Length: 304
Image (cartoon, rainbow, N blue to C red):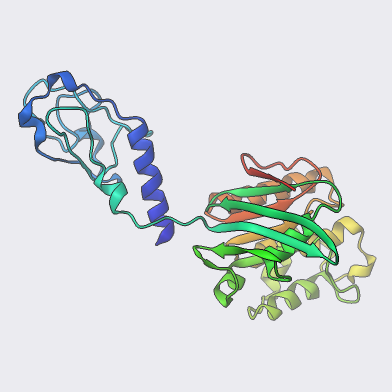
């Protein structure tokens, strides 16, 4: 439901940005509200680009009125539910925006501080990341990047500040169910096979993974023929791929990834970048640390 509100809000803002009004032709009679179709009800054949027939297929405020320009990027249809002229001027009352509930970012942190022993790693850190967005945490070695991600994962607590998920404190089972944290180390059991490691991790999550799905995930990461090989015989890059295969098998909305590109070759780096992009396109959120370029478009930056 919240994602639907986010989409409606963003559409409304785009529509307002592209609105064109020509007030000189309006008189007092133009106070009447004009109902505008929602995107789902749109009919291209009844749309107008520069006046004439209204967006609902009828003449608005008399013949020859040129006032509204279609704003939808695909076909020119304005997606706000209601627009109102006031005293023939160029004012628009955007009832849709004002009636929407407050939109919270998916992940937010405010005034975070982290202390290790007698050393303060960082203080006053805050950020907001929405659905479909990702955050690149940057900084020198020892500045607290991994410590920040451990705070987000709930593995440690901040000295000060708060972390919220969908507007709620990020400390309950719902948050943990939405979270996938992959640390800097490979975190696989050397004596188990790649397949057994992946199935064990899923079982600990309470979601047993069929062999067929586990094999398919490992093969996506280029581990075909090594599914039943003990992990101790794999290279560092291959061990990292076993860990990263959880991105495919664990359906989580928030990915917190600490140096995920470590030990990966060029092809694997590009594939992981594509996978993160697909996650974001599906409305997911990601927080990533890396000392190298991340092959994902956009993104926010946080320097520690």
